[in-house]
Length: 470
Image (cartoon, rainbow, N blue to C red; front, side, top):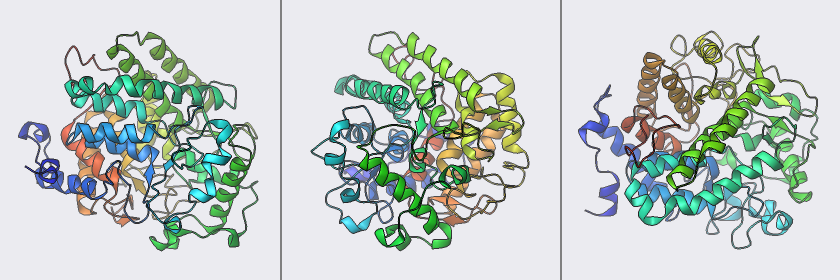
């Protein structure tokens, strides 16, 4: 059997027997082919046209799906990304492919100038990257990839190689990025949080003077409708922030933009739990990391929980106040195992209530408050539903005992992925495809939902039972 045939080989019946969606094998084959088509030989691009390089959190989600069809490729996906890590521990949000023309994507390598502008922070010289980061899903992905084939992982020394890099990544976030002094990591650019033009950024961004429109060319508009993408004004502010950060040698200080975000920190906490599991697998104790994850959970509640909103909110460190915008980021902490029961119950009520409408008015959870003034069902992170955030919510619902809601969301995710040719994002009401199709993490997370009904980041050691099911 050739490599392509192996990649798209259907899973055994038992892998999709629970709550089996119609034509699950066909959906599996289609998702696997997307990942094959997006494979570059060393990593997987999010989409061939719009995003032609390797993106950090995309690769983590892609590895989670790839583990079901090629654990070796999934390991390579993460190892390729971590090979571009900076000496200070940061994992850059883009690793550039030198074979891709400079004008295919902006900001391009000649904008970031990582090997020169990032010299003091330890940027690698052999590869060009961006200088900012993305959400730390990587340790969670590494643990799940290991669990898919522990024998292969141990034979290759996979966890032993990636653990020091993942630990350095977390140290960077916990020390260099605790800009608020409350124990949480901060983002210094909207792109770092991953939800680029979310309304939560509007107030913090309003004080940023945008770069002149003539100083850059938006390659993203070659692949998507302008009305679905961030505005030129917002983009000018993104460019200004990135250029200022670059010109300051990528030093981490509270300057033009510094925000504590609930989703970014929830994923850091989930990955701390995963690092504890990895440490135990390698023969060390994970007690300290589990304790750190629980302290971070307490800090998240103390600094970002808003009882009146019924969810977590962002904190603008320049002014010190919570940002009064309800975004899906504030629901992602449902993923955390140590979340107090009443907090988890409140998040479920908010998710299924009028602001997000899951199971009542929306097929998938929107990225922004349905009742918010800035809501737009098609404009990037200002309303459309995304597959990675809904995958995280599905896992969170299941973790906290909301099995029926989790099953319903899982069905909606699989139906929508298949119907939209694995769209980048969709209209939350109708499921209409938006953005790129054949999108990497949509296909990957479809595979994960087909194969795995649940996981628990505190799951038993793979030496005891194998696999990642709690």
